[in-house]
Image 1 (cartoon, one colour):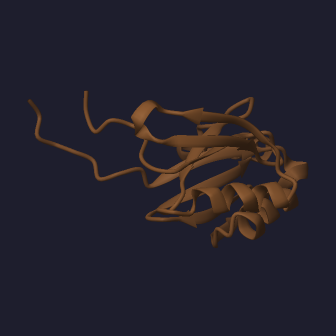
Image 2 (cartoon, helix red, strand yellow):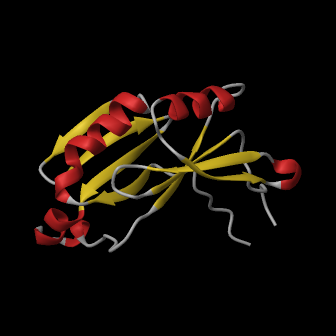
Length: 137
């Protein structure tokens, strides 16, 4: 068995169409309260806990050359965000008051619960009340 391990996920990437950049910045910055930590022509980075959520304009990224621009999707993506202990219901109510529709609720057996909603680009976001994944199999 190999003893190497990784410490976590540093970056998660979602994509949007060029016309939704301002709405994306308001949604993640103002509504979700994530601090923007970097901004460049075809993307913006928001700090979330120890990691970063990157949001790229999919059309502009496709025009950029080079190996690190060699990613993207043609449709919506997904990310699950972790609510701090005791804050799950507050997040649900905050989004509801802001007019964000909850599109699905899940209960993960004894492992927690989560709800789903969409950002202005159609990406499916999820907020979980705890780590809903087993530590190993």
